[in-house]
Amino acid sequence: MEEIIRNLKVQIIESLNLEDITPEEIDTEAPLFGDGLGLDSIDALEIMIILEKHYNIRIADPKKAKEAFYSVKTLAEYVVANREEQ
Image 1 (cartoon, helix red, strand yellow):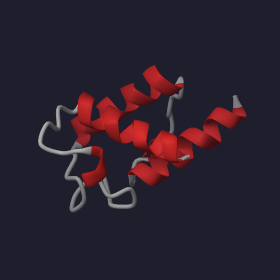
Image 2: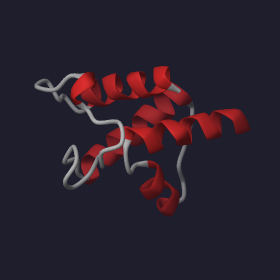
Image 3: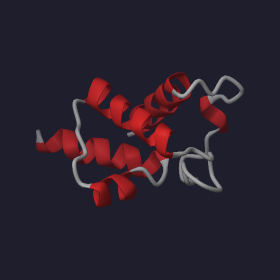
């Protein structure tokens, strides 16, 4: 789980060109959108691409996406849960 969290942080930084931030600076449990990391809907699409490209996971249900995209921790939990189902 820790490895997935670290990988997701690195992938988010690289995909979203967050050059001024390091993986260690991203709070694992902080919201990705709004007050936390401050991402927007375009960034959400980029995260969906990360999930498809690196983890072969597609999120079709917008409600599940909203829950999974809350924080890096919830995103990692979603990856772990959906990898096990495959």
